[in-house]
Length: 215
Image 1: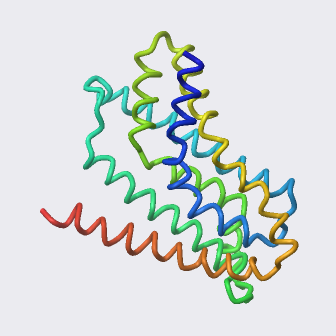
Image 2 (image 1 turned 180 degrees about the vertical axis):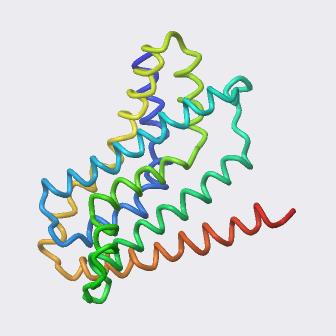
């Protein structure tokens, strides 16, 4: 069962990278203090928060009986993704405006600066990205719930998650690149700023209008 969980994560981890890396890579590359230890800590905070969201979703789906059919309602999945993009976009935008605005200006609003703290951003973005319920994640949730007792199901999901982690390994090398090419920090900050707007308005607000306002 452990091997199955790890192989499921390894074979489908590109889904996780597809949702996480566009938000995480520019954020990490644009950090002011981009040492290896701090970079690793931010990655850990992001991934830990994402795992927490997965556990919350699994418990919620089990509580309302959605796992009984063993299939995920695509409309519900899309609605969760809309909220994920908006929340993640707001976290990245607050980080850009409150800590390191793309063009080097420092925000003078203390509250916004606290809200845009790198650690807060990593946690909130991780919680938000966890709302993307892809088919591999749904499979892992169903298998962990119906694969045995609560303990074995818990470990099944943990090992599935571990199987997805190798796809994030390149992110640990970001400080190596940014220290040798400082211009990447400026490019990453601009990228983060526009990615946040893209998440909020195009993948979030406009998608929400079509999903919730089209009736």
